[in-house]
Amino acid sequence: MPVVPPFHHSPDHSSSSHANPTSFPHKWATNQPPAQDSPKLTFNCRPSPFLRIILSIVDPKPKYRTTYSSSTRPFVPMSEPLLLNFNLLVESPADPQALLNDGFRGDGIRITRRHLLTLDSVCLISAHLRVKGEEHQSAYEQAMARIDTTFAGEGIAVRSRPASPGGRMIALVMAPRIGGQALKETWAALDREGYGITGHRWLSQRDEVQALEFQIEGAPVEPAELTQRLRPWAEAQGIDFIVVPEGRERRRKKFLVIDMDSTLIRQECVDELAAYVGKRDEISAITARAMAGELDFETSLRERVRALKGLTVADIDKVYEERITLQPGAERMVAALRGAGIATCLVSGGFTLIADRIRDRLGLNDSVACTLELDETGTLTGEIKGPVIDASIKRKAVQAVADQVGADARSEGIAVGDGANDLLMLQAVDAGIGFHPKPLLIEQAPYTIARAPLDALLYVLGYSDEEIDHLISAPIPTPSPRRPRRRRPGRGRGAEGEASANDGAASEAASQPAATSEAS
Image (cartoon, rainbow, N blue to C red; front, side):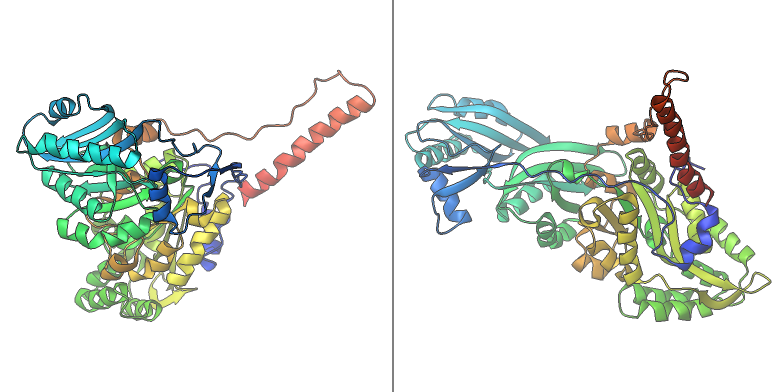
């Protein structure tokens, strides 16, 4: 069994944790001070023609009194060169990079930086151009005309557009294999939405899944909104496509709340128990309708549990050993999250007799599930003891875990599930992911992973395979609390000696609550 972090689940708390599903006895982390806002500087200026074009898009009635942050440079005077970003998609086996150099030689256009990605016979060039011209608009038109002339003369099919100023985000593409056709379709889909590609990075090229992220620029919009707009296209292409924020906030997560059935494990445990007593078809039909949101979850679950009356704990143990299997990638995902210092909690409408074993097997920090009522002989009575873990309780559990780790639930939490019972939980955080989702989640979940294995969640957070391997082999150490500094014996007399004694008493008192908490 993997080594569980210091804030692991304690068997002594299993009854209290299950009786109150949103109460967690563990003290995980403390609050961190919020980041201070950067100072603002105000400039009185009349923008250049090119900047007026940008302002007219952002604000149809520009006031010419623009506020910039201290890290933002004011408008570029017309006398300075214009910097442009271009996307070139070349469908040819020729050397587009050499052709690009020859085409932009002279005429005041210089390539300062470029990103080159070639898949099959398709080449994507993200070129940064430095253009000299009397006016920015004419310089822009000159650069566009130069690109068209350069590549049209060679008979190469090229589509080009400048990367628009504004929102910068990351577009992640995941598929069993990412080739030239996927590159063309991704470029075209982003182009239709008004976004240009400015760079790329491979996160994974494994046999199981390939993950390629693109840096994109365009109109500022919520990443989840752009993801949902392009979800029908991604479904048609047979790929997983997710847009996430650029920068550190992508990885700034403190906890994961995850479902069990059809998420951490490949099966629905109630269906497997029903199959053991010969009622799979009857129970599976009810489960499918409940996960699709067609039936009330609590009512349907109690109906299914009544069909299990007469099963013993030994029968459930046998079902677990013979029928329950982990989702591919589950162990790798949990190990990497543990290495990154991210707390993990299983919250399921399934049963504690299985959920607790999954928790211990993976080394999760906690688990919350429904408790099956047993008689004195260890046989199921067909009833549920305590509350049913439905959608509303799952949503409350997200906030409860956030409070325990000292996190902001919305921005620092991750939630993963597959069915209608998980929708409120997924919508409670920015990084809510429907994993191999049912139809309702495909329509309404912020993000979805429909084809990739469970550890693809790590790519959504921005980790590459090399970084994941490092997290698993050399996890981030948990800092130990500092002890109060104590004076050397005999160094102080009178008031100093008394202070030294008080220091020792304070240290002993400070350690007492920790011992009490551990014992509890």
